Figure (tube, one colour):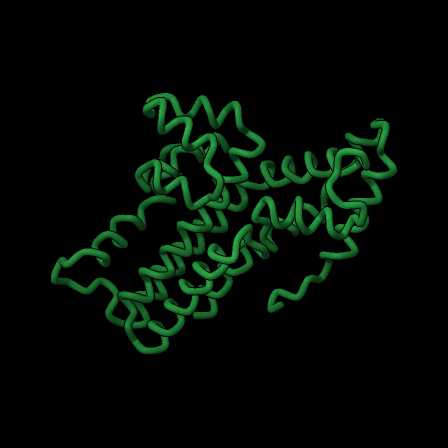
Length: 246
């Protein structure tokens, strides 16, 4: 159970709608109640949906800062589906427009090889067996579900490590845009960070760890560097030592 709870560190600290937040909370409650009640099959199903949610939030950020590459990766999709994926207004919409296994192909944009992508997606087979009437039970004890969760968490950490340059690009783009006082939405830096970075991009605590170590040197010659530095300083002061349980 403890290893499973670590997934919360990889999921957003803020959601763009109350329904999204309620959905993730429902999955956590379903996972925990079934785990504690010994219904490990259903507990694993809920945890897998949390895992796939993490994948969709990662894809959302890839599309945000790799839009050209993302569009090229859509070659082979129908033109209407391609447009829908480019215009998707929520990460969960990706699953409405493509098969679950297809979503992992976009990790090639991070330099992942087919073998790695196969590792990321291998849990779909067991999940589908759990979700359909097969007459068998895969996870009938705590040992078996803990082993499956351990495998999924290793792939979560692997995906997150590949996401580092994407997260840093998202953060860098935010800093550049927020350094323009005429263009940004909020005068207070704390509000601008919370709404247009954390909230807008489904940022997790693991993402925040990347951003706290962001290298500002490439921006030192920019016109608004002092404002950019001030925004980054505010970010660090606000999110350093964030309580994981909060």
